[in-house]
Image 1 (tube, rainbow, N blue to C red):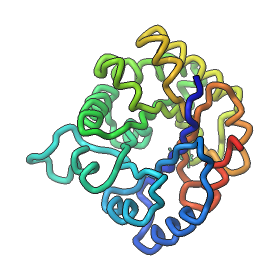
Image 2 (image 1 turned 45 degrees about the horizontal axis):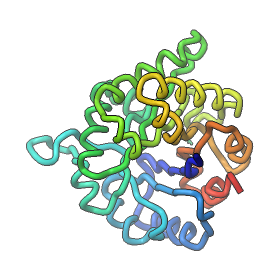
Image 3 (image 1 turned 90 degrees about the horizontal axis):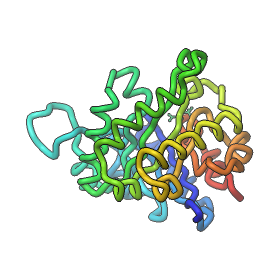
Image 4 (image 1 turned 180 degrees about the horizontal axis):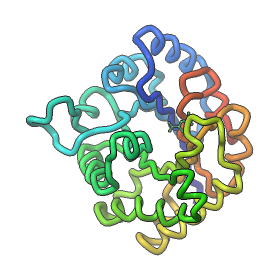
Length: 249
Ligand code: PEP
């Protein structure tokens, strides 16, 4: 089967009304290959603006959500609210949430369950720290992060999940994983899914790479058989993102 190439932008805590209008104008003027799915993650407050201004063949994502629909959870945003203001996706388990905000794999898995129940698709981030890679535990870390989600969702849910393998040492550092390093982990994630979920889910689930992807390194990474897309931070705030959307062309 062919897995539709998936390119996500993650704007993190960046942007303003003016800059988002500008960027949407730039993105709207670009071409998107028919066989590539594009999603942009924006800060909560800008989601309605982005959903209104961004081209309709690209989707909008939240960058996080909470685990309840409504209630006394001051400052939190539910997946239902994200869907209500136009988001179709949510990025969950980003390393900045795992390591700066100390969110556990179990909490992330609960969010995945609630987001899917609210009708959102999920970009599920996993990845190891530099010291974990150096200790040779990359796959143990990634599998443990995935275990929590595998235990919480059903086999059919995987049709609505994209896994983003994002080595933490590569995020925002300019130190991109080599195509071989990315392929090795992606292939191992696919093997993991085969054993932990099913051969069908392993074959069909898209595994995107994230970590210092840019216009110059995306094409080589995209050639690897198990790299099914990208999650892009810094470069998604620039016109260069359009080059990444064309990585497979
Ligand atoms: C990210 O934030 O998910 C990311 C991959 O960032 P960058 O592309 O800037 O490394």
